[in-house]
Image 1 (tube, rainbow, N blue to C red):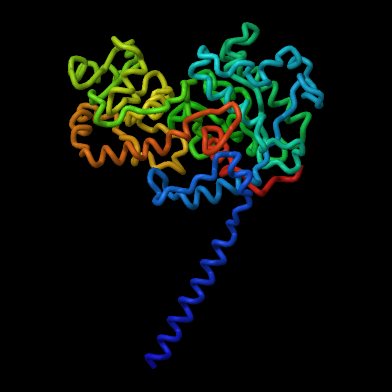
Image 2: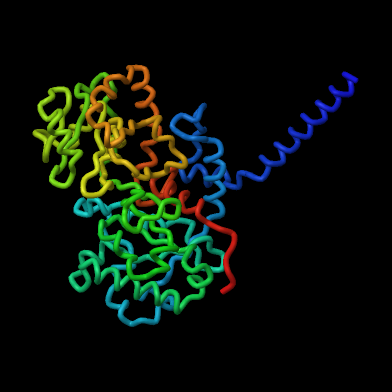
Length: 407
């Protein structure tokens, strides 16, 4: 009888091994070595997950995306394809085309919006055959509309966007095939939260790729929409200050008029010599605060979206995020607790105690992981590696569906 039990146990283990091998076989690596090298993907994965939830699973699915993902970009009046029928769009070519100078420092908070469009249009994801597309991109720019005196106001922008989306639904069959659920648009301007207000399908069904990614942000729908990292155009950092060269505990500078939490920080530590917290511009260059500090604060102002998180990552300063219900970029891939500190808005008074309680060894781990994620918060004119564009595209890849209603 014991021998029978052993045989049954061995048979069960063999069946489990065969089943596991079969499951793993559904994730083949289609990307050739040549393509991997060109994209900067040839570096081996880290020996452990580090700042990632599961590096191996992510890297495998990422390579499948590079090989398979297809996005159809709706044509505009500025090319030779058939545009939407409404003639009013012909006088707004800049709204649909890439920004002529996306690295212009004046773009500031809207750099990511324009870089995403530029990167997408130069990527291998774009297909001219909408029948093979996983997703459909609506290429209007809220930032450009905001700066066009013919539109400019929030209500006029919403009317323009609704009119354009209705034209897409009228002239192309793909919107109606999914009610817009496999369509998306990108925006970083604060006005973006109202841009879809006058078109129910765009507001409720389409994917909003946005920097204003708060659970309680008006017209942002968690798990439908995608958090776009807000990045400013910064020069490359060849070297970073190591932890031992950072002589300040905390750094923050910003307006306090529209934030009770920022005011509380000033009241508590505005005169603390270990914590550089400024109600406006610091007494030294803005970037210097990130270079010389161990922790850099991201504090909700009028909205949660600022470039401070990306700036902190860029300069090697551990982000401290004090914004409840903020959907962090790439959170399904990156474990933010392994390279940042997240503080509840109601516990601001404990901030200094919390940071001082982090041991030197724990800080060193946070810093090492921060170095590993820096490549995900960089835009390139030609997308490469695991940069901001490819990481954002991966979020969209996860939204794809193999099902589509009959048109």
